[in-house]
Amino acid sequence: MSLHRCATSHRSRLPRCILSRHSSCGVRSPLAWRAELLWPRSLRSYSSDHGDDPRLKDLGRQIHNEYAAIREHYATPKYPIVLAHGLLGFAELRLAGGWLPAIHYWRGITDALKANGIEVITATVPPSGSIEQRAERLARGISEVAQDKSVNIIAHSMGGLDARYMISHLQPKNVDVRSLVTVASPHRGTAFADYVFKEIGADRLPSIYKLVKGIGMDTGAFEQLTRSYMIEKFNPQTPDDPHVRYFSYGAMVDQPPLLSPFRHSHGVISDVEGPNDGLVSVTSSKWGSYKGTLVRVSHLDLINWTNRVGWTLRKWMGQGPTFNAIAFYLDIADMLAKEDL
Image (cartoon, rainbow, N blue to C red; front, top):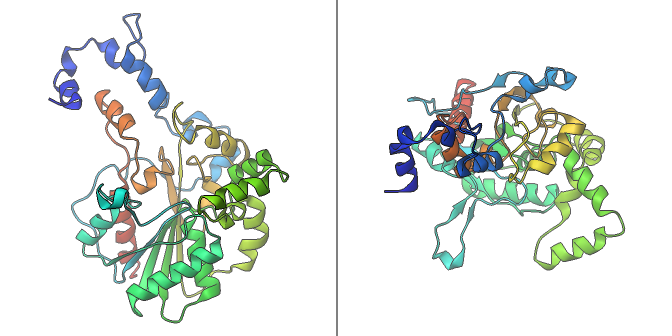
């Protein structure tokens, strides 16, 4: 019997303090300590903990448990959907010469959309290339597959900036974009990028870039994610296309648990911009018609890279999942269908 099944089947036999993070037996169990490391102290939303923060007035519609489970029916949009990945992303990654299963950026999302009768195009762009480089590859990838069909684009993180640049500047003749949905895209940059460049310093930056290039990576993306670049240069020079519908979503979490890769970045962004998902603030995520803020959802949760250990601990403690990324993207497709797209 697996650990999970064993813990589930014997849950009622364990002392209540073993399953609780606040022991009534006077002894903190190993499970309780793991919960402190892998699970935030509170499942309450940011707004309930920080109601005096004036930046919370700009959250828009707060989405709590709307995407906790997959519905029985979703409408199918008229046009194919292009999935555009973010910084350091990929469509599919194969390791060990194909001996290991492929790793998918859009984990389970592509298959779910296809199962709902949607033609899906997963574009691959340079992971850390500049917006201009990534946008050119995005346009090429769409044109090669879409073959003059109209498309809807759903973009996560930096993918939204690539798509905006492609639509505004490149305007490829055989790519007809009908809508762009951005999910936690840093339209106004991110305070964490500002922080990183400040910490590195101008003197050390060339050597850091040399190291990055030495392992075969581009460096064009990084400075373009600063707030000054996005607000003062990119946005003024990248107007929306009046023939394209723009939608956006943001996300936010409370302070991530101790072992979360977003713990430090979340704090930096919170101090400067307010509620955020660990990498991108709600304020920066807004573009076009803002559809709402996903509560208790991190930047990686948005592409179904949920912390499985934390999810299992929550299940042991009687807390069901509050967000299913597959349900979220199926609902975006449903929304596009209802918008006649």
